[in-house]
Length: 200
Image (cartoon, rainbow, N blue to C red; front, side, top):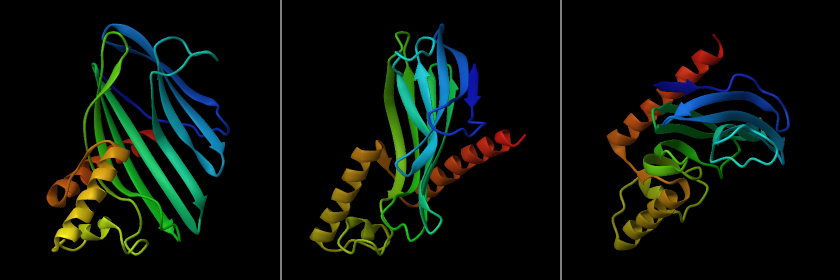
């Protein structure tokens, strides 16, 4: 059974906006979409619970569906969507920035998780392409060699360290060129499906 769930409503300050029971590996779980608005960030988070939601329950897993920070003149955004197919969960994420927000990520990621019969959520694999800042923000960053060839040993090492750090922070394998373009297209298609479902 394939389940595709989307956030449908925006409510301020940690309100439960959607609560939905799902069957995974023969067990019933509860998925909640919870909005927040604090410290300059506002958005919606998905939380997976093994039991009914109450004030003492802790989620097994959480994932950002939407996040915005900053002002119109300098804004960063994160947009996510997820699918659950049997015991397999796929997460799609796109980061972007606009205006004078130079020190924020831009890029895409797809991750795959498995949920076992005990409710353990295990990361399986992921792919990503992420520029952590605007190209002109840090002239010393190894990120610059995503846009031009790294020639010297020092430049190649700088790029290697940049990729390693991004993979550690965002959890996935860094991809380039055609594969990065295909990744973006898949994320874009998933998020378009989310938008179309929201406005039906």
